[in-house]
Image 1 (cartoon, one colour):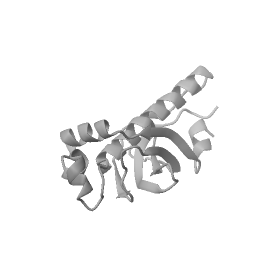
Image 2 (cartoon, helix red, strand yellow; image 1 turned 180 degrees about the vertical axis):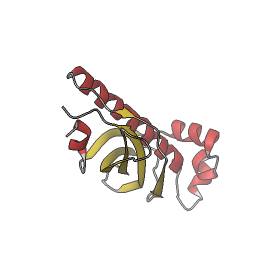
Image 3 (tube, rainbow, N blue to C red; image 1 turned 90 degrees about the vertical axis):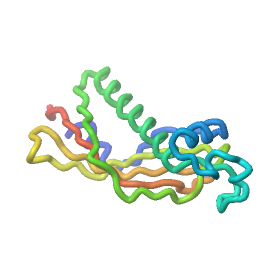
Length: 158
């Protein structure tokens, strides 16, 4: 069994992020310039009632924290004298849902759960890692969820 297999079914806390008005507007101005993401006054008159983060912004923060977590895991395994897995690209995600708005001042906690590892016949030594991910606001409400996959080459079990 490799270290990554020990994480199967375990919800990993990737960390939290505080969403500020300046950051929400800056991201949205560049990538998702809808009125409820870039204009506080217009946002007050929208169906959201206040300035809120783009769902893509929320998803991008998950990605940053996910990569940081995988990098930290690999460093920890290396420091312990273990060969870390090689993380490869992702073929994509599905079932992305932005369940509740992320407002200015919300602190969002992000998670990832590895659901399955499946050997790839077409790529010897590589496996497909299936994951479920989520994000929760400071009240414990789930604000985002999705399923994804990534290629991973696991070290040989010793």
